[in-house]
Amino acid sequence: MRPIGLFGTFFLSGSLSVASSLAVYQDSTFYSFSPQNTFIGFTQGVEAKCEGRALQVEAKSDCPKVERLCGLLTSLEEKKEDLQELEANTNILNQLILLPRPSALDASASIESAKTLSQEQSRLQVEQKQLGEEVLIAQGAFEQQAPSMQAQYIAASCTKDLELRIPYGYVTFSSEYEAKLENEKEVSVTQYLQITNKSGIDIQADTALFYYRSANQYVQPIDFNPWIVSKYEPRAKAVYTEAMAAPMVAMVADQSVSAKRHPTPYASYEDAREYKINALDLPSTGVPLIVPVLSWKAPLECQIFVYPYVNTKAFQVCSFTPKYQIDTHEWKVISNEKIINESARGEYKKDKYDLYTKVEEDIQIERKPIVKKEGEEGIFGGTIHKKDGFTLEIVNKSDKPKTLKLIERIPSSTTEDIHSKLLSVKAETKVDYMLLDEGKIEINLTLVAHENKKIEVLFELSYDKDVKVTY
Image (tube, rainbow, N blue to C red):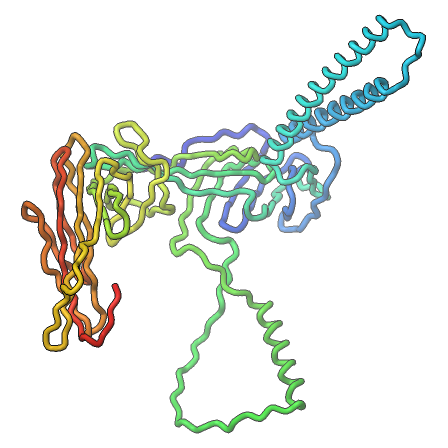
């Protein structure tokens, strides 16, 4: 399948008069547009330039009412005022209740008055609690969308290109992947771009670019230096005196200044991936915007693996050859229109990509060491021959047959003083296995429905009787 075009279409609301652009890097964001006024948003740490000329950014108490975030803040402030008024009314009522009452007051009137005051007090308390919760919710919602509750303006008007440098973390993006398994023979991969804006600036860009690299990359200039070979001459041992201490301090100071002038190179991705969106409307809501990027299919091979010496849980691995570079390794896996894993992991392995799709709950394995009786070690010519091993019990609890690859191991020696040898891999029927390097054993199994299979693995260690071994 051909890649889906550039991420779908996003429409502008008409507030920008000329072309605008957005560039999001891993360490900062650049937003260029032609503003209609001096208002920027509810942000902080932003640097502004108008046609390359630096502009001061200042905070003000008011904001344009037509702006979305300004409307939210105004509503929040009104709720806070209403809450303060309720609190004041409650305090006044509490003071009225505490006032001394005339002794000549009619008893029935006094009871009715107390009842009315109590009802009013209860009503105010309920309203105060509800309004207090509304204020907390509204304030939390605003703080999710903007880092500041103060409106930010540029100090002078800019009628042409205004460039804002937005600090790291306010506009972010990441790749997400979805794999649909088609009968475990083909995979349909869809890549999405997840973009989050919580800068406090509602962004509308005709062109938006997203880079998997830093905008600030320091490259240390390097020149060729010859590698000199010379006759060795012993150096005289240095003798340090108090008179030499001052120049040493000066040298250290010079190195310190040099270190500040030349910072440590910034680590960046090897393959700088780049994505583009046309006509992007990205309000500062703090809620991720998910945009499709690419969709493609590839042949798929799936197999069940288990490594009992590490973990007795069996799992499925599906391998394919990617058509495009995979940026992140967390996947959503779907099979037969059902989500089987929301956070599957994947990795490049040799020339393929392995996707760890799910745990095979129907396969149960128990691994037990073979207990050897004391005195079963043999000594021949000063060499100890020790036999050891373990048993594996594999059960298929499914109603369907299961084929799996079981990876086991025997001790592997890195010294000539100790030798390891596989003696046998036995079961009631012949076991299809292969002994590989470093003691690795690959066992291929096919279990019919509800089959229980037992395998015994035996090995022998040979070493000098004066040598102690551990494994």
